Every structure is written in C-alpha cells, then in structure tokens.
Image 1: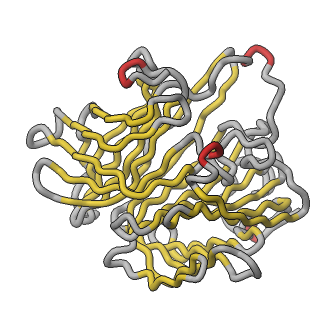
Image 2 (image 1 turned 180 degrees about the vertical axis):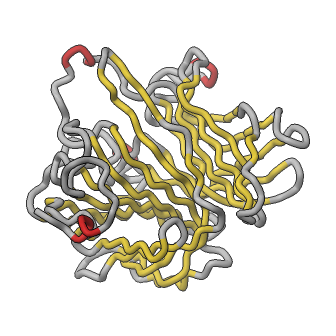
Length: 364
C-alpha cells in the first residue's frame, strides 16, 4: 500500500518505501536517546525501532530515579506508513533532520512517567564506523549509525515529581542506527549454538564539553582483537574539522567482575596519539541504568525488540534496584562526569558490558 513517503524521491529499490532491499528478518531502523541533568539526580534512556520485515514497531522509556527503575514500553504492528513514529503514548517528531527532535510520552492512568521534551543537537551529527560481524557464514551485524550530543528542553514527570527541563543542564546523547542485527523472536540456533553474537568488552562514551564532544567506542575481544573502535573530537563549530584522536586505550576499575553483571566505579580513557599531544579522560560514573531490563535490548523471553506482541500493546512497571537486584543484568548505561587532562569537565554517557570472559579485568 502506498504511503506519504512514496511522494518523495527517496526510493532505493524498485518497490514502495514501506519495504527494504532485503528479506532478512533482522533488518531494523532505530532511535536511541538518553537524558541526564549533568548530575547524579537521574538517568533516562529512550528508544524506538521499526522492523519492516517483521511488521513490528516498538518503543520504550526507562529511567533510574533513586532506587526505582521505571519502564514504559509499547509495541504494535508497523502497518504501511513508516512515517508514523508513534507507539501507544510514545511519539517521536523530527522537527529538523539531524538537529531537532521532539520526544513525547503522553499521560496515561497509572503510568510512572510522562514527558514532552525537545532535543537540540550540540554538534553536527557524526557518522560512526560500520559495525559488521559474520559468523559461521551468516551476517549477524551489518549496521550504520550516526551519533550526536545535545541538550533537552521541556517538561518531565517521574512519579509525583515534575521537572522543568532546561538546556543549561539537561543534556544527553543520541544515535540513529539501521541495518542488520538480531531482533524479534529467538531463532533456532543451529550451528550458532554456544557461540556468542557479541564477544569481549563493549565500551561506548559520547562526552559533551562546552566547545566540543569526544565520541569513543571500543568492542574488544578477550584476545585483544578489536572488531570496532573509534575516537574523535567533534567541534561545536561546524566549520572546524573533526579530529581523529588515534587508537584509544582504556583502564577500568571493576568492583564486580562477572559476565553480564560487571560494574565499573571509575575509569581512565587515554588517547596517546591525539593531535597536540596525549590526552587523558578521568571517568566518574554517576547514575546507572540496567538498560537491558524491560526495554527489549536484553535476553528476557517476554519482550525483545521486534518481537510480535499483537496489534498494539502498552505496558508499564517499576522495580526496586536493590530488592529486584537478581533481575538487573547486562548492558550498563551511566550518566558520567568526564575530566580531561587539559582541564575541561564535561558530562555524558558511559556505557559498557562484558559478554563473557575478559582476562585483563578478571571477568570470568
């Protein structure tokens, strides 16, 4: 069926815009955002994804406030109009591509949160390296992504508290990614049984300072091989060229060293080959969210990105991170303070997970 997108000269294949140029069930197209107050007050992660070959669209919001882990999530059939970026009470509006985006969670009875906030990019959107993983002959990851730091404005309610969100302190990062990655219902593993899709350490940190941002990413296997890495300084002034900072090095201090349950309390990220001389970043994690819990990113059998839940389903719940600690696992997203060896102080996301043994840090 035709949609409004078919009136634009955007087609990449001889088919409607509703369809993509592959029948791979794992094709996805996703938004990710986070929000913090440049402090340890709270940390929130939001996302929405479309899965055209599964005919599913879903969305989530998860926020850590105090000891509470609040989740609102929804899923529906995608239908024919991919411009409809809404799922239940959650809606995304692109006001100006690569610059301004509105994120809305409408009020509903009993819901632990609601918001109407607008994103403003602080730096030009940056295209990250392609992420590609092939195992046993099958492409498991083949995705593109752009990243951006920025500020938020608007209003936010969490429980009985309301917050005026102003861009002087409410900041965050976002990414848009699309391509192939495992989504939907679990598939029979076949030859992949016992073989992890992701291996080693995943570490990602978009760091926002006054005049620039540093975007750092490493996926390193236990043997030291890196399947993905990048480290750049992107200036707020679009006239200044992005600087490659060379091969990044990491030094993490773990207080818990278990696969999928590791916890870092401080880190140092080094860029020994940065232009102008070596650069070092002291990382202090602030408030963390176990982002795999309830959002669809994880291994929970009842809710995964792209899983068919019916024509439309909306759910919400709250957990206590101490009382429900046995449910807390996987990818950790932190708000964090970053202090450069050159003196600048910034804030942003510090994300990590250990997908199995990692001898360097005693993860086993």
